[in-house]
Length: 312
Image (cartoon, rainbow, N blue to C red; front, side, top):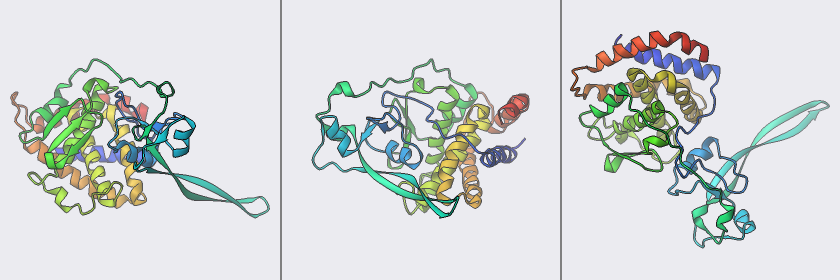
C-alpha cells in the first residue's frame, strides 16, 4: 500500500463520518486551566466561541459579563477590553394558524476573563485540576516526529497547543495531561503539519493573506493541519483511536465555508503535500523507511477493521 492509497482510505473515512454526522469536538487534554467556561453558570462555551476564547492570552478558563463581575462583588479592571461571544436565538412567528416559522437570529454579548477583573472572592472561583496519567510512548507515532530532520523545536508543558511561525516552535501541553496517548500524538501532528508551511519548508504560509482568527485563510489552514494529522495518525497506526475527534474538528471549521465540499478536497491536497514533506525528510536509525511504516499501518488497519465497523 503506498501513501497515496492510505491518504484515500483516511479521506474516505473522514467523508463517511462527516456524512453520517459527528459528535462535537472534545479537547483531548485537561491542564490546570481547563476549558473556557462561564464562571457563574460553569457551563463550557462551544462552537466558534470555544475557539475564540481558547486562543486568548489568558491562563484562566473562566469568563463572565460585566454585570456578573459586579454580582460577585468584583469589577472589571479599568481599560480591559471584552471579548464578543455569539449565540443563536430562535424567533418564532405564526404565519398561519398552526404553522410556526422559526428564524435563527444571531445575538451576542461581551465577556471578560477572570484575569481582567478584581475584587472577586477566591472562594467563589471553582478549583481546577490537571488530568494526570502515565504516558507511554507509541514507538511508530514517536518515530515520525523524532526522525524528522528539519522539524521545528517542540516545547512541552504549555497551557495550549500551538505553532508559532516566527519562532518556528511548537508548544504542547504536558504529555501526562492527555486523556489518551494517541490523542497526544494527534495534537502534536496537527501542530507539526502547521509547521510545514514555514518559509524554510513548503512556503504554504506565504500564500495566506488573512491571518485573523476564523477568516477563510485561517480556517483553510486549520483544515489542512487536521487533515494532515489524520493522515499521520493513519501512517503510525493510531487512526482508530483518533479519527472521530479529527473529523469533529474538521467539521467545526468546514462550516466556515458553509460545508462546501470543494474546500475539503483542497485541504486534503495541501495536507498530502505537507505529510509528504515530513515523510521525505525522515532519518530512521532502525532502517525503517516511511513506506515500511505505511505498510505496517495497513496491516494494523486490516487487523482492526472488524472493531472499527462496530464504532461507525
